[in-house]
Length: 237
Image (cartoon, rainbow, N blue to C red; front, side):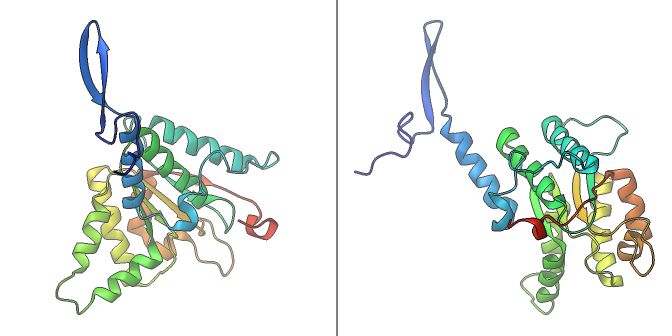
């Protein structure tokens, strides 16, 4: 007979505890681990981020105030979730150039909430989502709505690479997700390489995602701007 993976409960999921002479059956601590594992698998976080992005290994550069502030904002968000101040945004939009830690902080929030709060969350790479939707066209057994509905309704959603595609179709698809979450006041995290005040030939975020979508995000999310050099050029991930 195989050895039980948990010696405390012998894999029953419960342990017995005596309180004031009465024996109670309570969930074993292994159940928390199993629930976190399930939540992590269901979140859809890419392997490169899943076990590498947390607050403990995020590099806070002392002479970069924007990175320090972003770290503090992200950590506070995870600690206070799901309690949000009434009338205030319940999401975060991390904005900045490539390689400054936007996705790291956003995924760290997901990991912290799933591990400590045991609350579900979902990661969506916007570029991959667009590809999945296109691949569904012509498939009678799988519709675009079936792809978008669980994303739009997820308890906590992280949208990575906001603005990666700027076609009218992409903007309409994104607007559907954002509007559904806006109407239901669902907390949303987003990352983007585009800024609101782009200069020269660079597109602004509004140009990439559309005026209506950006307008809703102003109300839904606190914008967290991060400046700095691409860490991938400085060190290996």
